[in-house]
Image (cartoon, rainbow, N blue to C red; front, side, top):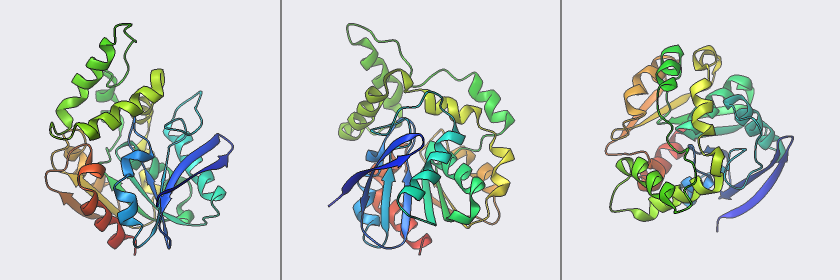
Length: 259
């Protein structure tokens, strides 16, 4: 059974779901998702570890934020560990969650046992400049006739399999929960100065690439090249919804790496 709860932090309450026992692995989701991104992974990883999927502060059922930044997300992750009484844990993040995991490991290297970076972009000056010209993904003005819902679907559909509308519906639900804040996570990534922080990571790192993810797979080599001898794994055919569609492979990779 997946257990759910809330943890108190100075940023407000953080909502989480967990499964299993043993060495803790904290799972950090992409923008604009929630813990639900790991719904399939939790019981699989929970066979060998205490798998904990938290709603990033400002997302899902966690407390809202006035100002979004990768630094704030990471600080809340570390306070979340405090609230759960975890001195150390493995952090595993997908897309935005991977960026947050890098910052958490840079801030508190003594608390991060291992780091799993799935489809994680490398954000340096060139990437920030490119992202500055990128149109918003989730931000839309509400159309009284519901046209904004169709537009969200149209923008995201190319990156999701057409035969799994159930997975796509879960994404849309998380977008609607965030409302006008749906783009904040992307903006936070676009402002992050990863090149100044990634060198502070001291733990072993596993970089996971999804071969059919057009956003992050091309950046796998750039990210890995800034880390000290990382392990690299590629999931062939993996798309943006890697956690939902390749949960067995993902859980197995994390479980073996986090032993």
